[in-house]
Length: 496
Image 1 (spheres, rainbow, N blue to C red):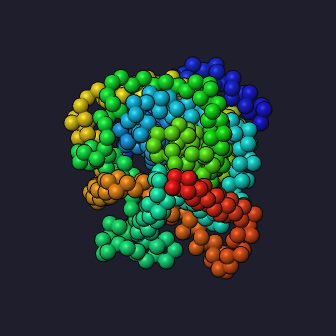
Image 2: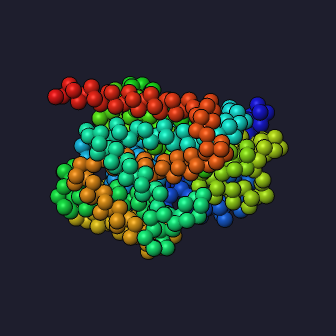
Image 3: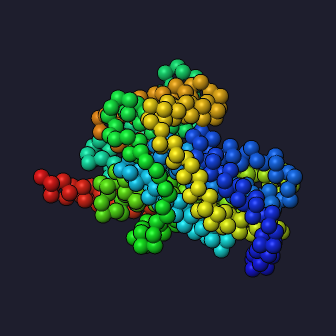
């Protein structure tokens, strides 16, 4: 391990071309991440053919930098326009955009950038030091553990984004219900499709996400239900958080970085789930859970640290097991195979220099991201000087183009429009959007894995909850849910 790390460090530091590729990769990734509908998956996929002219290490280092940059990039449009550029940035919108509307867009962007860098560096260092143990941890997760993990995130919906517990629960259960639309993953029968074949594949998450956040906000402004001008106008300057501000968020950053790294190692889960669960846990353990959704720094730090830490975590199953940990790493398999590299346990033994070069490249990319992110966010923010009469329609056009570009599917546009109307209605009735999104993201994970676990354990629920990891997560969910209800009841009594 030490020999591989030393030789990789010498190679990376002695070749200036690697730094050029890192810079280009980070900038490319941020731009794709910040553009709704494009995401890092598209950014990586478009670059794979060009890596064929590079050495394997150079090509993979560049792809890793794109992955790092795109994960942060989604937060720029999420904060400035309430339009998440990528799914993992949707949580950032919940507090980033309200903070921006208060005239604190620069602070919100700085928090997102600083938290992303901290989480990304934490995840990459964990990847360098603990790749084999993390791979064993991922293998220990079965359907029971995945179900318990999803429940842990879902149980926080009662505390998020609303003074009314019942409104938060209704929004959360609505999200869980919408997550059941489509073909039953175990039986193959259609559910709640109403004879529409386009719904057999379920509700596409990205069109729903963009409609719920971006389109509903435009409708709210046109309808006069949203307060204030966009970010209050003026010049936006990205301000990195001061050391004392980072220190005040240390628990949130550490907890979210650990959660993001661990969840990132789980195949097929990815940064989006990591962001939502970290946000849920930040709400659960906060002394002021009612502040979430109104522009609290913890609401930005938690998802951004987690989704960037998950980038490092997602490389563990890819390189150590040959199993993609996220959609982006699934595409990166193409970058490996195009150079004749077979990911798996032997890769860590036979090609240490390549593996550790990728790790070091991602570590450096997180540092370079700070510089690139400040400048790119500044140029994006110049749009805010325009009247909203120009910005609003431009957001709609950009969202429509991005959604259609995903699958060239007109039905996705209908989904976006429907969720835009739904989001507008919820905002008008003062229902929070966060519980709905959490239900939509974590609902399928909970349902499918519960049913698989029941089948594997002969429908014996005791067998499921007696598993150490699953039982511990479910116990934590129950205790924290009880505490959450008690805290809100106590707060309600004080205000009466």
